Image (tube, rainbow, N blue to C red; front, side):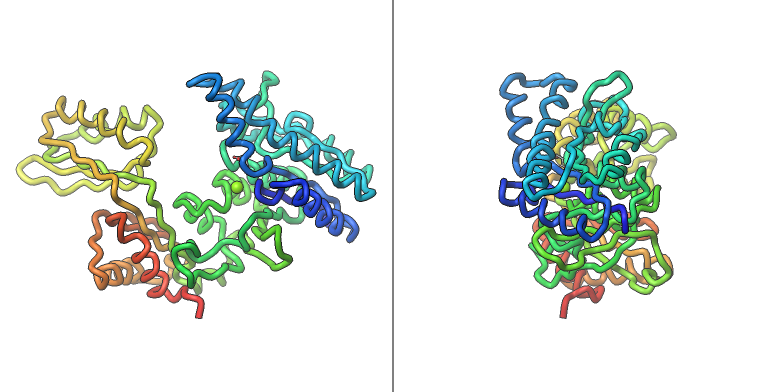
Length: 405
Ligand code: ASP
Ligand code: MG
């Protein structure tokens, strides 16, 4: 007998029929003697519709009320699911975030889970019920409803698995698992059987939208094994687990890309102490995540500075930088939105040399110009022209031996 936390995403519970299919699947596990805690997302499209409603009422919805509205999608799902379970002759209880004591901080729209009191869930399990918990929501210390950020139901599930000391956390979704790269642009992408938390964090932060990033951070911190798998098949998916020695044998385990960044260059910046801090301070203060930063060596006391920001922040960042550039006497500011970042990822890089060189060579063979480079222990990223993204992903996937034969 095991304690299993399962999470089903929006497309998995997108209709009455699908909710019934999920209920049947959960009952099978229950029949095998497992204790079942099931976290559900809102039915597909519901969260978007709810947000739209709020914006129909106001151009800048009150953050507290927006969370009150957004969190209702999951409430419907757990209610319908519990009804489905009961119609199959079993007992279920639906719990909203506050009823399951999912305590968060008070950052509406992007709250973090602080702790979970498991008494209520444990009691329900002890009474042989299947427990359905609304994903994506919690309660702050003043009793306000909060939400965890889009895609946050994954984090609810992993946090519950950690708090309940579950044997496994299964994330059911509409794909078979995590792939070596995006199968939509590289038909030879392969499903990974296993990967480390760190690799998943890199893949997730680069736009492989399989798991909510916070859920992986949580899983890593509390060592919760995550099984990402399909709702629509019985195949095993991808296990996301702590790093093992075996994983180091594979040099590169995935190729990721991100088209959602833009580049800002400041030409001829006077090169003296304090300048970088002057330039970046207002950008950081407005909460913009600056990614790759490159500064040239200075010539005659001037240098060029280039960095990337998320595309939605591009115009405001460009404006801010323009003002500072004038103040500090830089020559000019240039912006480029048509870029993308391609990365090769793998814990095996730590023990293998030459990954960066192979990446540069592979891109060069296709005549793809590298504009910026950044590296970490388990990743090499290159910023290139956006129109070459698909080509770059495919040739790198092949060069690093990831193609499905
Ligand atoms: N329903 C929420 C969203 O669409 C949370 C989730 O699905 O994980 O972002
Ligand atoms: Mg999701």
